Length: 133
Image (cartoon, rainbow, N blue to C red; front, side):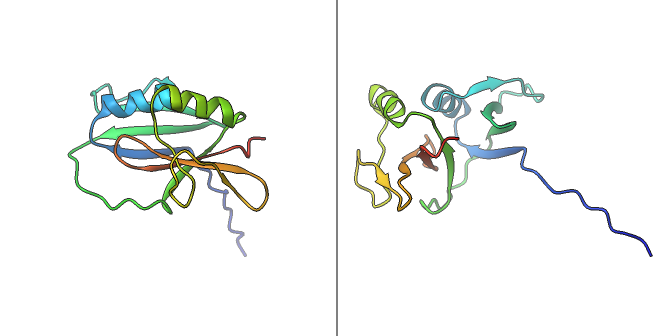
């Protein structure tokens, strides 16, 4: 009788399809403040970022095709200081909203966690919350 050996899968990166690599890389570097890291392709169509916890964000430019974007389909990042993050957004004139769509408002989950939502240059929804441990 043989025993099945399985390893638990782990997430290593999130890939985001973008229409303009330079614009999106600038957003993830300067608005989200992620560190850009070495990427192996060197083709001008990829930018990789360290997003913490041994995870990466791979931003990939390709022939753009219209996509349906819904707030329910989002990437979430937790931060240690919501006030500082919002100050950075305001300084860069980046709009954010609560879950209901009210501009400049912070959503409060039932467990007390603050959340805001913003869009990257291609319209992808990003949740920012302060559930940072």
